[in-house]
Image (tube, rainbow, N blue to C red; front, side, top):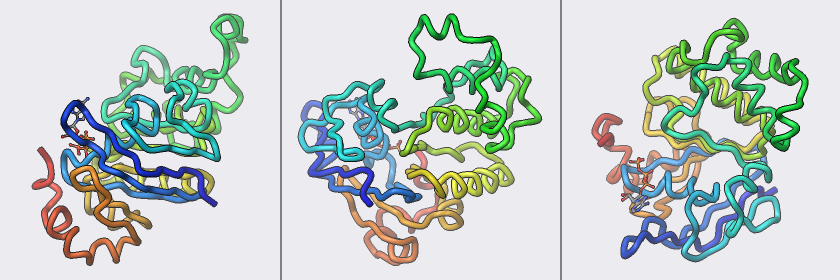
Length: 248
Ligand SMILES: Nc1ncnc2c1ncn2[C@@H]1O[C@H](COP(=O)(O)OP(=O)(O)OP(=O)(O)O)[C@@H](O)[C@H]1O
């Protein structure tokens, strides 16, 4: 069943076309990798789905509702969560408090002030899910890079999204952290729809099921990993190069 339906989406910045008549659908429970060379339009696509960037034309329908003119806040409440390339955790709060705040996002400001001092009941489960239980009371600023990414994923899950959009979740991670993240994303995709923007080809080969390739603002191709890997156009623009060569 379709969860996200993007039709004929175009985004221009002045005279520059960043997304050029994109059609894309995502089904419930999909783990979709979005790849493409630098400047292909991957982040712009996520920015547009989440209301940060306005479409120039086209429609984005999520769970049967049009998102085009909705605010970022409304889109989060509708069930779409994202991470950014840069971390957004509160470094001077504990790991548990960061997740607690994220879980309280539906509260009004006055409710936030009056809420009980006991943490949200879901916090321990969320920390367990991402493997951060031993760090529950640590300040978020003391976490390793990989642990911060997992904390951000727990914060996203606390908001009960149906669709998670993750921008380069394993960038800068160690090999062991990448493996843990791949396993975590696979588990999350069992009951969410997950889109992962990723440059790391080894990670892609290990964990990708369906892959969409963007190039110069257009969908170059889409399919399972083997189909995409064997597509000569993809090899030419992307997969034929090493991950290092695709970095800026
Ligand atoms: N606000 C903006 N104003 C003007 N141009 C922009 C803006 N945002 C993005 N662009 C341009 O749109 C193109 C697509 O950028 P985008 O960040 O979406 O690419 P990307 O595929 O995510 O690349 P990367 O892998 O480097 O993050 C780039 O040429 C970029 O310079």
